[in-house]
Image (cartoon, rainbow, N blue to C red; front, side):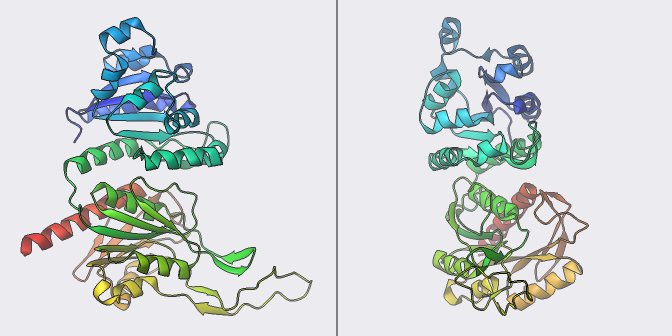
Length: 406
């Protein structure tokens, strides 16, 4: 997929810069040619010599180098590539991109390019979550910048959370997906609706019923569908995830909010209900904080929430052509999911084991079974991005086979 593709890598100034060296090699293994711009900050962590040794080309560093400008020039450098890949993308570098600054070779090349740009953010969790960074991320997303990561995990600063650079294999896979989608968009012209994350069901103004869903799987699926050309609407419960590039995201809180947003997004060709919707809510939400007075705990009367998956399956002439549910189970995974598919009326159901021993609920990986009326396929455990890409490919193949049969 990357044979003869030209990638200009821009290496920002962060500890994760050392991973850019491995990324260069892995991209070359796939057939890509790589040039690199090393920022001043990046050169504090790796050297121009190490970069040029791997790329087999000059490592570009200085905007005002007469030699570099005479031989290549930042305009030509930024436009001869098929893709600009910023890895790691620091908070400062993303701020420069968002505000159109051209204060060094990297930011100038990014401003001068007419080619697609992909960023791989990496920074301290507080820097990533800062409102200014999130505003800049939103601006870049609106500008069409493709974002990969960040992921959750341990950081060099000793903190744990979101902000860790995406793993190199995940970045390579994302680059391959980009070029694959650019060459063929089998879901172009179709509308996909995806739900993701938990729902929060209020008990009083400060407490709620929720679950451990991170939303990662649903977000990955929405992004994978968009890369295959689908116009994608993501209805998301509360998460800490950035909205996927190229996806319309509707943020909701409760199950009733999610139901309304889903039906408001119809008609759709594809509906994938990944969200871990709370089964119950409090019958009567308290309008002020319930006080602990030293006596018995309050009694909560629960009522059943709307069944969003079943509602989409029974939406009459607005029913999507392909409805896919998710079933997170702790035991008898395939049996319970098979029964759920029949009960809800969906076409496919994706079952996954979330028993405590698996560590999957809210984690980075997933191991699923794809169940249809005709079969049950056991998929190997893999990263949620990989599961998303595999499911998106299966959806595309489903519609292609239907068209071929007509």
